[in-house]
Image (cartoon, rainbow, N blue to C red; front, side, top):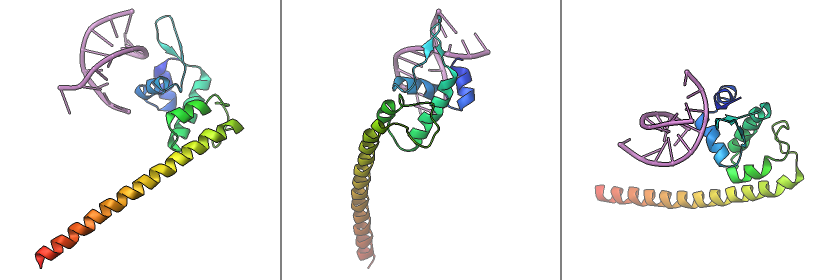
Length: 123
DNA sequence: CTTCTGACA
DNA sequence: TGTCAGTA
């Protein structure tokens, strides 16, 4: 099938399908006209990609995990080797959370100081 | 009519 | 991610 049908089957806009390919997540064949040709497995693969993306994994991590049973049932990755990248991504997320908490504190401090000052001027 | 690549009032 | 352009 070509990109139009995959789009209908997965509900994923073709613009995104091409983006996934650009990120090395999908590797469709090309017909004599240069059109992308997808197989039935690709349909399930797109579903798996969406699942992993929704879990917060970046395309780089997903790229490494996909070759591991891309047709397996969703909910887990059936490869022990995928544990390392998964943990690395988890740590990256922890770092982002810490950075966000820090930013939140600064913004909260700025807001409190602003409120206090406004209160003083009013008095 | 469908898809492709590259680009952004 | 949308979308417009100019093709194949």
